[in-house]
Each structure stands twice: as structure tokens, then as C-alpha cells.
Length: 512
Image (cartoon, rainbow, N blue to C red; front, top):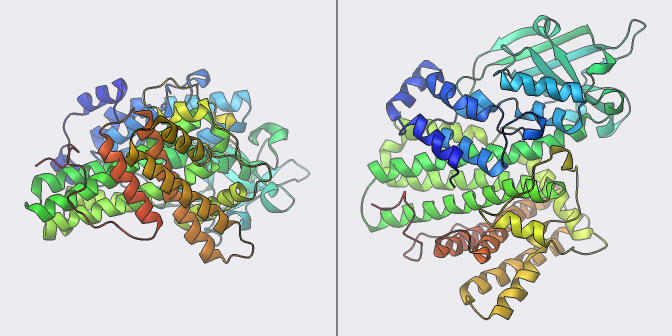
């Protein structure tokens, strides 16, 4: 995955410097690397029409990955405001959109204050509220461990504004000096270096009605805007895993054991990395071509990339042996990648979202719609993309082009009379998807059953991405995509493929 801008950033950052990574980790800093990468990343998720530099989210992914393969903490140091900024771009007024873009361009982060200490796992149980008083609305309540809280001058706060359920919440912009006065505890950078946290206490903080995101029309839209913004965040956050996998494969290749078993293990790891990359790139492109369908796809790619990141590190660690647990770049990257699993949406919440999206797909009354050109553009790397419009995202959808497009792909491959290996994978993936949708449509499933089916669906979504990309001919080598499809179908079935000689040996990080 390379673009001109990503290639330029690679040249400016220079070769990965493991000794510099060690020093940053020991000192708890991000230093010059974040300063060098920051200008390329700060506005890379903001469309040009809104004042940003986004050309495509695939390019944004490539830029963030280039930085993350040197140090995953560069991402939170330079892109931590993506959630709040995207939520405002989706539903804010013109003045609010301009404000958050100006802050991002100046290197200032808009914090996202959602969690509460007693309700961290369930935002809908939060008690922080925007309360009407005779003197005007005031904000009352506490927010816990707000990222970049000690340094930010603006925060987006999820607050109750009346009613029940998701419509009971709104997003409110709070700025200095009120925000500075609300900080009651600054906390160290637990996990990623360079990211400090703050607890906020709002004691009758006066808020203008104009500070609700979207103005009066934005009241009650807080959860909706948050979830729609998270779709973009889940896709772009996969760059941390992709970059960490690059580092793990490089270190294992340079310092690991030699021999046929080690080589086969690294080949299997490289196939897993390819599967993750293809799925992430398609997800990024799909936000351009079918933004209203990504409630499912964004959750699927978040799950798959985090799971495959773990697999790559497990396999690379076995090649490295005892040195994998010693202080150094591999251990640092593994720790940072593990934290990425819990950023933006935790695993259980993500599976809940994915299960709900799959059930909507399985129970839709009208059947699948032919995805057509929107699918072709998403899976053909190098094809032109429409401009990304954050407002085109949707809370839920009843179509999913990668899965809906499998029957037509099977028919086309059969009619073409060629590539029997790809046809076999497409047929098998389509059959797996049909079986999954039938299973998840059964009423009365217990939450653990739904979670298991959701995880299976995520891997099948990735397998569908691989067969569609293979059919487009826009990603080489073909053998690697076929192996990636096999790996993903195996993971959907609950197993990991044993490394063997069938894996493709052309991955640049495997050649020894």
C-alpha cells in the first residue's frame, strides 16, 4: 500500500530507527518523529471541501501506517482529535466545522469526553447532563480519563439533554477557560506514550445553546453522531495495527531463527498481514463509494485487523524466541498494538455493533441490492474514488456491498471459464456467508452466541474483500490473496491454519 504522499513521508522520516524508538519509550516521549509526521496527518482525515488535506482515506491510512511502522504512538500524538472533529463535520454547524478544522490545522486536539468512571462500558448509562436553569443551560457531571485532557483547549462532551435511550444525549463543545477550570485530575500516559488523560468535573458550567453540535437541531443526536464518527475512526485506526505488523515482520526477518519451520511461520504471518492490509484498504475505499453501508464494514475491519495483528506478533515471536520478550522494538510495538485493540470501540462493544448490523442484513425484507459500480471502485486499487463526505455515513444500513456482491462475482467467474482456484474461494466464501446470515437470523440467540457469529462474520467480510480484490486484478501476487482468503475462512471457522509450503513466499518481509 503506497501513495505518492506516503512515499514522500517515508523518505522524510527515514529508515525505522529502533534505537530512537527505545529512547522515546524510556523517556515517555514522541519527540521529533511526531513533529515530522504531524503536518501530514493532522488534516489528512478532513475533506478538502472542509479545509483539510484528505485526498482519499486509503491515502490517509497509508500515511498513518508509514508513521506507525516506526512508532505506533505517532498516531495518537497527531490524530487523537479525529473522533470529535469527524462528529462535528457530520452534524455541526458551519461555524463549528470551521472551528474544529482550524484547531486541527494548528496542531490542537479537540478532546472527546464520553466515559464516566461508573459507566465506562455503557455511555447510555452516563449521568453528565446539560440542565436548563433560570440563568440558562449549564453542564453538570464528571468525565473520566479524557484523552489529551491536560493539554486541550476544547472538548466535545457527551451529555444528557432529556428523554430516554440514545436520543437522550447531545454533544456539547466546551472551551477554555471553562474547560481548564473543569480539570480536577491529570493522569499519566497509561499505555501509549505522549497521550495524557484528565478527569473533568463540570459544576454548573454555563453553556450557550449554540455550543450543542448542530445547534438546536442537534439536540438528541449525540449518540448518533458519535457512532457515525466512530465508523471513520475504526477504519483509520487500523493503521496502528498495520504499521505494527510491518515492524514485527521486519524484526523477525532480521533477528529471528533461520530454517524451514521459521520460514513457514513467517510466511503464515505475512499472509495474515496481507489479509489485514487488503481488508483495511477496501474499508477505507468503501467509505468513499458507499459511506452509508459502513456500520458493518467498519466494525468488521476493526475486529479482523486487531485479531490478525495478534496472530502476526504470535508467529513472529515464535521465530524470535526468547528475544521477543526482551526490552526492544518488538516488545514495544507489541504492547502498543495491544492497546490499539481498545481504542475507539472496545472488543465487546464492537461485536455488539457487528452482530446488530449482520442481523439487519439477514432480516431485511427486500433482499440484497446489486452493488454495481460502488463495489467495483472500492475493490479495484488505483481506481478513481468519489470525494469522501462524512455526512454520508449512516447509523445503520440494510445493504453491504462486499457480501451482497458475492453471488454476482461467482456467476461472473463461472461464465468466464477461468481461474478455477479463485472461483472455488468465491463459491466457498459465498456459501459461508449464506450460512452465517441464516444462523444469525434465528430468534432468541444468547449474547455469547451472537458474539461468536459476529466474529465469524467479520472474518468472512474480510474474505469477501480478498476475493473481490483478486477478481479485480488490482493486487498482486494473486497467490497471496488466495492464501489470505484461506486463512480468513479458517479463522471464521474458529481455527488457525498450520504454516506450510503452500503459503506465498514473495512478501518482502519474508524473503530471507
